[in-house]
Length: 460
Image (tube, rainbow, N blue to C red; front, side, top):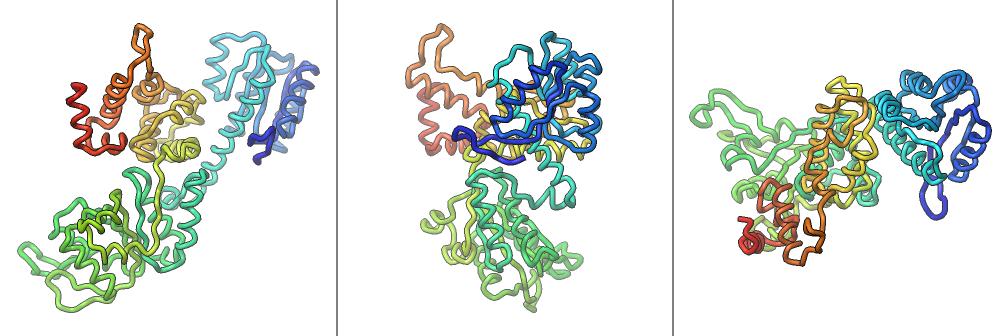
């Protein structure tokens, strides 16, 4: 399947089988679909269609439900058993709720009632082929080693992520230090692992450490290790992360939270390419690549004296800036299917797809928690889903609340600007769990301004 241009818009073109016992319907559907660049094969006999499918698979099947040789639901069942990634659209002149439910449970992409318009068929075919393309990509990824699937994939084909991937793959073979910046949940460690996986150090260890989670003494102990009897309770030698990462990559997350004295020690390690364990006397040679990450603006922090400038310049040889998920919404379907495949493998569930309604809801959501939030949403959906297709009911309720947000009062009158601001601030506080720092970041104001507005509107 490949992108084609049709009337200035990109259309996903694929191989389509159409099954119907009415020749006129086959002729009309062929004409509609071929206008969008699809390769179309038509069949009046479903047995012949299934035989051809075994020999020469297609991307999408559009089948009538009532046919003399085999009904469309049976066709659907045969296809999903042999080739579950192929999309199936059922069309019928005798639509019923029970029939639609049965078709959905068996994995039909859509259940369309006659008469339908050419636009309906075009749109459904495009959407079904996009889902097939995404699922095929996830299947290819699932055949790669587990550690690569989990830890070093750059997922996304949006322009911003294409730029990120290009930079990562270009600098991965070099030895320069890299600084990765981006909001929490954008995938900074994933980008660091991708750098390592595509570098000459990929056979070495990848060690990750969060600089904001420990005190100065604990950071020194974790990074440098210690000799026996170096301090009270040091009953044995401990190898630090610097030594463990020798020959590989050390990832320092939240580097902006590292205490100033430790910044000095890290700077010396980078300059001298050696370190001394706590309680030790002999320097140990070091051959590592350092990849640091921060959600903070380290350039501003360095200019203001909150972070050492010399260390900032040592770390920021090359910078990689990860976009917010809201800036790359085109990637949400691909990411969603990637997570679906991951959690399917872990839980052994037979979930095949995400309904279009659920996907629309995901694409309309602002994702303050970025990719990590999307991952959590899909893990929850897989756990709750009772069928083979994830539905809106399997998603968190607050996603629907975002979509239903109205600019009107219950009486129908429009909100004024102050009321709109009040409701939006309340909404952001709700989705951030009341974390004011995060809410202020989303709103683009400082915490003091947010506090004043909360006091003004009685939201304290």
